[in-house]
Image (tube, rainbow, N blue to C red; front, side, top):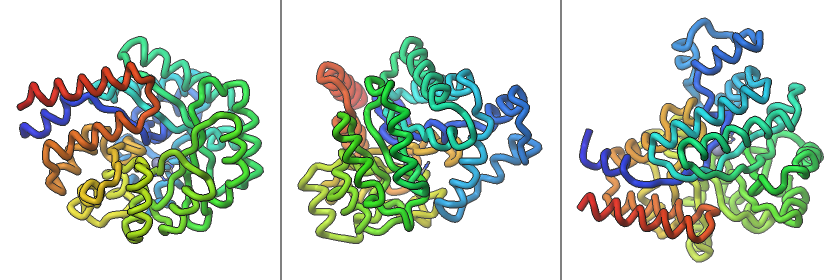
Length: 338
Ligand code: ADE
Ligand code: ZN
């Protein structure tokens, strides 16, 4: 335990890139499988963890969708969400903007309402008990059709006041942002914010499409933008927030070694990078682990860590009173550690 680790743990943080289904811990998976009568292809929690060894995004997604099969009742979604909020509160995370994948559930016969009512009640209970505020982002599965995405958006209409925006996730290669141009335009007309995974495995052209065709408000990941200087300049000029996920990038072989992670380079270039956990149960760490392991691997200074935290607070959809309070808490915490 170094001073720097204590410093990271003490900072008030936000998380802007988290798939709630990716926070399903193996212990919970067993518990829910037992109470719902679902059989799992694993004999133990250790066997599950051992299976989490991925060469690319798709290998992870295959297990991620299989793992979701235990989530069946509103209580399951409540428990999943509440457990995540409790964990991030312990990480001194004060606000979260989480993705959910409704199609991963409606496809197997679980009602959209069951999913969202459970998640919303988990978020409400988490705020009441731990003071963590939140927003919910409905993410479309990009390996499915745009028509399927439209259908999902229609199911969300009664919940629009509780949904911040729409996202785009799942298998990136071969499913460019332009495939979802019309449904994103519709979501924008409905007053929703727009987010898309781009440049995780996909080329810089997919990041351009997310900007030019979808008109996104943030880019999720964005790593491969660094291959294109003009794109980097544009992201810097537009102050586009990138929700970067170091341990995810390591586990999915987006980087070969955490020492080669671009998080520091992104800051040097003036990009608005933030640190996030993506799917913490699958990738081996929650928010603090992502900061700590990235900081140790690439040698982040205290100032750089504070910049990353600040980028998150500034990139979040907070009311200005809460944003100001969090920024003040951040500067007070930094002063106390000098
Ligand atoms: N779904 C959950 N995590 C994801 C990621 N990192 N990329 C794409 N889709 C995802
Ligand atoms: Zn993600």
